[in-house]
Image 1: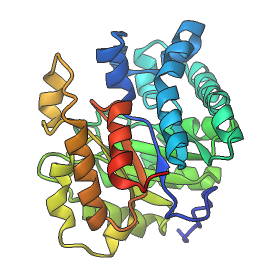
Image 2: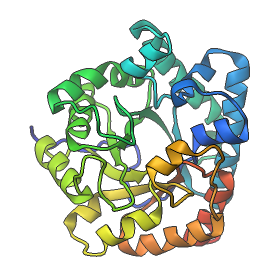
Image 3: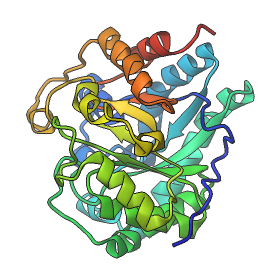
Length: 316
């Protein structure tokens, strides 16, 4: 497959953008909202749920505004794919509708931020077919392309600026998603997750997964991210450097340094130390020269993002 330009709406890939933190952990542990299958998209189906999502996202948009940086606003659709939707009683038509609704909701939510003249990107969030913490259901790249096409097309049709596949733990699913996005003519970002040893749950190294994904797609992903892992889990694998490191632009780390297995069993939220996490982000920026998309994942909230801004960005 030939190389395809990223076509991201922001021409300067060095421009700093913030994201939110750990949506699902915040809703579950802080708001006390039950999330069957860890899915937040059902909240979009009723007004009270949309108000919960609005209250969650607004502090992050305010932080980006104070610091004078752009914002990547994710849709609440990480679980809105066929297998997870089926477990929750959603048909393929239901899922297409909720993915479109999620984009419209995000666009309206970010309207005032965009009117300030700030850069706002509506990002269609895609999750793995299986469990993000275990590579126990693996597809070929061709299967992954077919599987994810419906959600990607729905997000594109609704007007998303880009799509990001989060918590991906083996290369073939990343490759299939990238190819589906290319066919849909929408920019795509791939975000891998790693275990405490810095490797994907499949046993692949992050370097291998990125290089294979680029090689077999002709470099389709606009850039790569790391999410749902603590900074201490990724430092050692970055120390040797290499051209593949230049492809990593985003980081959405967990607040906790616990393993995925420990987090899966946790009954209380481990929010770590926001100030310490921010310092670790600052240190990682020395190892990741193109790191400019800053956000959080499990256990983080707007306090962590504010601390990351104070540690990593010049004063507005």
